[in-house]
Image 1 (cartoon, rainbow, N blue to C red):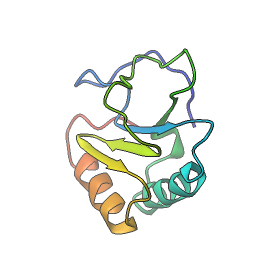
Image 2 (image 1 turned 90 degrees about the horizontal axis):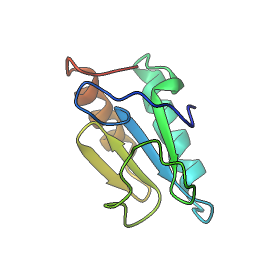
Image 3 (image 1 turned 135 degrees about the horizontal axis):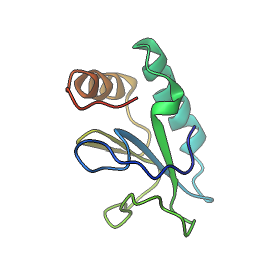
Image 4 (image 1 turned 120 degrees about the vertical axis):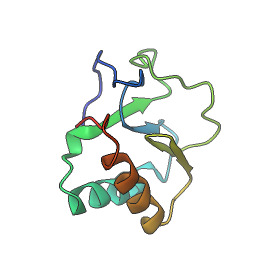
Length: 104
């Protein structure tokens, strides 16, 4: 997973798939596994995940202002919090892949 990148997507976000995590997040590892499984199902590399540690000073340009709980995943314009249902993650990944601006 990519921890620090300075590039942005065509729509101006720091990544098409952003995983927000923190030191005290007890469910983050489980959610990362769900996300990685969904990505591998559609042939998307794990490197497509932008990992943002909200406890770090280096947020790579990703806004953490609207993050109210951990874990939080943003897949394109879909925001998922807590432990999301696998089908919801799959659906969000499919919608993101279908957009012309999707970056890997």
